Image 1 (cartoon, rainbow, N blue to C red):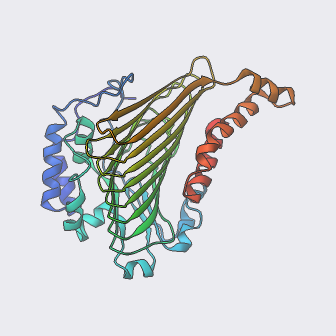
Image 2: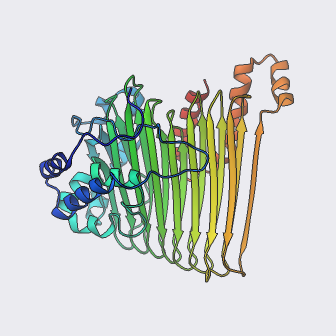
Image 3: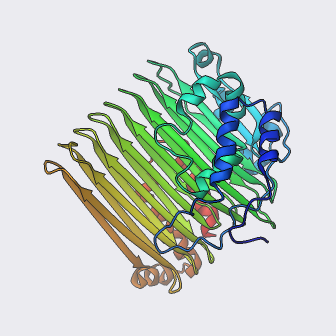
Length: 436
């Protein structure tokens, strides 16, 4: 297995040939080549208390094969379980090894002008629309080395566009499934809901058990228009040999609302940031996330919300469980900018450690530059209650089963509040798999 930061084996000639083969627009190829040069000089992110210099971000197979399927019935059982009934609704996208494997959009939504496709198709058929949102408002490809690597090597992704005044009552789901054990999943999602519209969108990242090395470099840009509403759900379930960098970012307009419901269940080393900019007056965001750390896994999670608009509101609820020798940092940052009067920012972070070797740090941060606001935080870090464990075991329950019940009980207050039923069901199944 290759570890450590190295210069990628793919040069500018490879990148331009790859872009040409996919018939990408010239402006997109230009960003690729500029980002490749920047990736050689830009520094890595510097997450607090987490050393990532030895993590593998650059060694991976880039252009891997995939195949289309006529129906989701052709997919393996463990993949089909994540899809549920969404094939019947006609709004489903499955990407295998980064490439389109299955796509369906109902005739009703297609007639309303909804675009729901993979990024490669969107660049060919809706290039000007993609250009309007790709690394323009809330994400910068020159932010650090990992964002530059992302822009240079993007090989997968999703584009969802909901026109003005279109309310979608059924969820739209994307499943990004990595089958190749050494693949690099460099995925970029752009979710745009224009003014007066609403949608529920769910994306799942899944990789099979591997014996090689793999990389996931994931960025999502979510745009909530004025008077619009997005429920964004995600279950990240990548295997232990996948080094993951996940960066999700939201931009919320006037009277807009963005709800995040995220299950951070990767089994490998993970660096994750979730950022929301409350730009418009009376804009709202709600962030709920759960995670489990196992083995010697290292993770760093930052949830950051920035208030710009007056009367804007934010709430953050994070629960994390650390087992065995796992180590995780949980940063919660709420920033209220000057001028964002009458705003309200609240956050709660709770971390449970199930062994003496596990470690979890919760760091709540409030940065307030405006007087007329409300803000508050709560945080707790603790080990499993021996009395609670003893009580369960005295009833004939094994220690392993008792820990499983305690983990479910600790995460339930967050999972039960998730606004997307499909995400709840998937998370319960994934949590059960992680704690067995």
